Image (cartoon, rainbow, N blue to C red; front, side, top):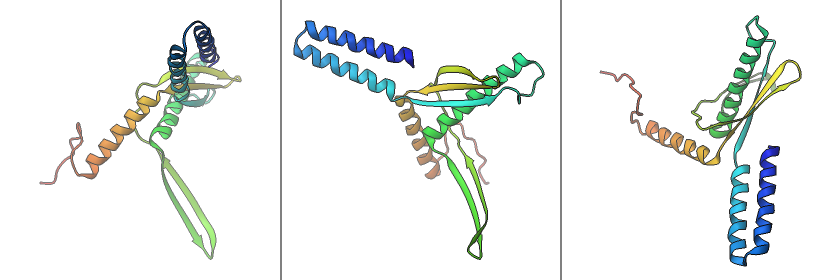
Length: 169
């Protein structure tokens, strides 16, 4: 992230230098181009996943670290899924004599993510890894449109491509 900010600051500095040596129309075009770049960079969805090293099922410490990195990456993908598609919640509450007797929550997230970029793999302390992923806003929009199209087909009772469900005879 520090590298991206430095890149933006250098771009802005270059923009000011260009503005000093060119006319107003060029300055306006360059400024709008710099703004579009900054908006695109900050419009990405970021997700971080976490995993503990010592709970990984392996006796080899190096393998435990690798498994922890993999688990934290999957956790980051789950977080991206939640941000793109939302989260399905199933909640049951039982009330007796105006007192909550029990409250259960189940959550589920399902979807497809493509185009995520690995931002960082970072050890935290001695026993945890974090993985941060980034997903471009344009890809998010594409994924949501694909999801809406699939739901429309499903609700219309049409078969989805690749779905070979059995039909009643």
